[in-house]
Every structure is written in C-alpha cells, then in structure tokens.
Length: 324
Length: 256
Image 1 (cartoon, chains in turn purple, green):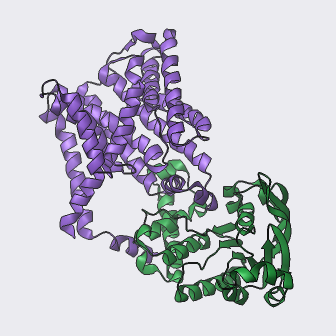
Image 2 (cartoon, rainbow over the protein chains, first blue to last red):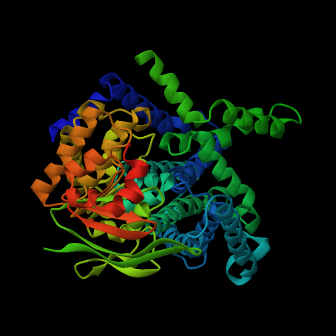
Image 3 (cartoon, each protein chain N blue to C red):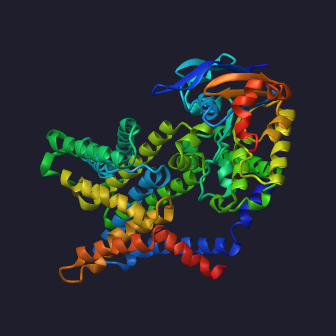
C-alpha cells in the first residue's frame, strides 16, 4: 500500500506541494480580505467572478472531463435563479433552503435534458442543447403568473437566520459555496466518476470494456453541472436583484463555454481563471475608448492560438520551469 | 465449471456475411487460439462476445447469461475482459491513473461520498492504488508508473492494456493480436503472464494472433475461421496438419 503512495509522491516533488499549498493559502487570505480593499463595484465584480467560476467548475465536468458540449447552461443558470427567487420571494422559504431546492430541481432538469442528448455528439449535441436552452428560456418567458414574464422579477435583499444579506454577506456566501464547489470538483477529479468521464471522452468502446456505462455517466455529468449552474444562478439573482428571461440567453451559454476553454479544459484551476478572465479583463479594457469589445475578442483569439491548454496550462508550465 | 459458449453466431454487415453459424466453446482454464486470414471474422467474433457488435443470428452465452443481448459494459461486468489490438488508453494520463480506471468496478462508493471524499472513499482508493502497484510490478513496468502513457513505446502500452484486464476480476480474457509490436522479451513476459493467469485464476483465454509459433506453443486448442465460417477446431498439431487449413490460411500468413 505504501508502495503506491511512494510512486505518487515521487512523481511530485515536495517543494511543489508546499509551494502550491502556500499559493492556495494566499489566494484564500486575499479573497477573505478583499471586501476591505475594494469599493462596491469591485466587490460586485468579485462576487460575479465567484458565481461564474461555480458555473465553469460544473460545466468543466461535462465539457472538460466527459467531452460533451452544452449550449444550455445559461438556462440552467436561469432556472436556478428563478427557482430560488420564486421560492424565497413568493413562497417565503428561507434563502439557503430555496437555493438548495432550486438547485435540486434544476439537477433533475439537467438529467432529463441529458437523455435525448445521449444520442448526439459534437456539433449536433451543441445544436440540440442550444434548442433546449431556447425552450427553457421561452417557458420562463411565457409562465407570466410565476415568473413575471418579460417584465422580470425585482428582488429584495435575502436574509439568513434573521441577518439581511448585504453585498459583503453575499460575497462571503459566494466564496463559501465556490470553495465547496471547488472541493467537490477536486474530489470527483481524483475519484471513480472523474476517471470514468475521462475515459468516455477518450473512447466509449474502452469505457464499455471496463464496465463503465457511458450513458449513465453522461447523465450524471449533465446533472452535476446543472446543479453547479443552478446554485450560481440562485446567487446571481440576489447579486443583481433583478432578473428577466433576457439575462439567460444563448450568448451567456457561449460565454460559459468560453470560460472553461480559455481557462483550460479539464482543469479545475482553469475554470476559476477563465471566469476571472471573463469578468475582470473587459473591466480593465473599459478605459480604452470605443474598442473594449474588439480588444477582448482579439485577446480570446490570442489566448486560444498561443495557449491551446488554456490559461491554467500556461501558468502550470511557467510555474514548473524554475523548479526543475 | 461455466464456459463461454458461442452458439451458431452469424453477423451480416449489409449483405456481407462476416460470420456464418460459428459454434464453439471456451472452457475455464483453457487457452484457445482463434486464427484465420485477414477478413475471416476474428475481430468481429471478439466484438460479438464483448457486446460491441450484435449477432444477426445465434447467441453468446456464459452459463445462464446471454452476453449477446447485453451492452458492452454489462458484458464486462459478467467478467469478460478485452484487450484491444490497439491499446485504448488515455494518452494524457499517467500509467498509474490509466490502470486505476480499470478498478472502476471494484470501487463501490456513491457520488455523494465521492464529492465529499469521505473516509470510505479514501480507504477504497488506497486499496485500488495498491492493486495497481502489484499489477505494475508483475508486468515489470513499475518504473514507468508516473510516466504519461502517450510518451511510452507501443509495447509498453499494450502491456498496460493487459494490466487493465488483470485488475478487473475477470473469468475470461479476449486478446486481439497481443504480440504485434512487442519485442522478444516482452513477448516472453506476456506468455508467462497469460500462463500465470490461467494457473492462478483458472482464466479462460481466447487469443487472436497471426504468429504461428507463439499460438501453437501457447494454446491448448486452435479454432480456424475462413470467410466467416469455422473450418477447424482442435489441438494445434492436428489443426495445423489439416489440408483445408493449410490451403486457406497458411499459404498467406505463415510467415507472419
């Protein structure tokens, strides 16, 4: 037993371990202290980064590990947002309970969407999920009595155990849930599900010969990623305090997919970097007159051309060089 | 003892008869060579047994279980291992991780425990890692445990693919051209491993291979296919003396 552990340990130098541990500690320290150092808008952006990172972490199971493209994650995000808002605002449930119930509801929708998607792959799957997304968005739009239709829903600040959740509170809640999501994603990546998804991406014939039911695992991947997206949606609704169906369009789905790819497919750190890139970089470019969209688009091209492994892959290569 | 029964199996691919009424049995503890010229239907037959191709007629049975009605994953769960002609490994993962994937069926924790990495997950993962280390040692490739599979020579990758089957608690093993691309020392190691698997676990082995000296030295019995039909089934010496086998097959591939 110790033999195997030795092999694994030998493959990673000790310095790298303590180096990564220090980096992770530093990140959490910075994240925890952030509300002290930024203004309200800065805090909004950081919260949004955490929310998008949660979506990207979930989508990474599906796209990065199982190799399945989804263009309906904005809709899962939206269903989570609406379910949480409706349960909290209209049914009067506690916010955290609504968030969780909304996420479970969306998980079920994710699993249902996965069933017809099992027959499709690549571009065909992308188009089919695009269709699912449009259908879900349309249902939200038409179900006026519940969702307010195109007029949207305006929300008041939620409270947890009697405490009203302000901008700081929501930021810390997002940080906690994102950390939990990160922990779950890391565990799955080194467990039987993560490995099964990787084999399915590589070869379904190989997966079958190892006793892995590809269909079952693709459904699991859709369901988990819908869960992550819905939790993020439930946070997002109360970050912006106003949601309407327009907020959850296919364009947002494409952004989610880009975050995972830009950050680095199949890497957990990459999902977070990708989300940060998507939120922070356009803000930095805002000072440039008339051209932020153009430059952001070009940056995406540059990242993809010169860093096919994404931002995380690049960072890892840079980080390893001095240690060798 | 249960045996693997191939019963009157036929496969048509759009009018082409890939297999026609093939019947034979593979007993536990026996090593059977499946030989025949290219296009004889050997790989198609392996695909029928492992649930990848559905027979048009006939069935494959293991005791009471009809394998030919199952998905490939369900067949694997019945204890049928498959080693492909070209190893189906995840190139970007390490050797150790590629083998760990084959422990899938022996890991019995649920998704929720996995997300939280509860103690039972850690315990089972440690046990699996130890099994992987044992298999690596018996394959003689412990040194490359941490190496990326994509960076290894072809022969090593084929051994790793066999290692996966060894981790799966199987009763029967199907091998498709296992020694193609292996060097002499790898071939003799493979031979020892296969004989060891039979000796220790009573494994039944069906091996497709063109190399006659290897097959006749290893197998108890040879089954010969030609144009989808079974033309001989018996001990190597007898089968290789058969005039029909000589004319259909040996003229073409004896030099392999």
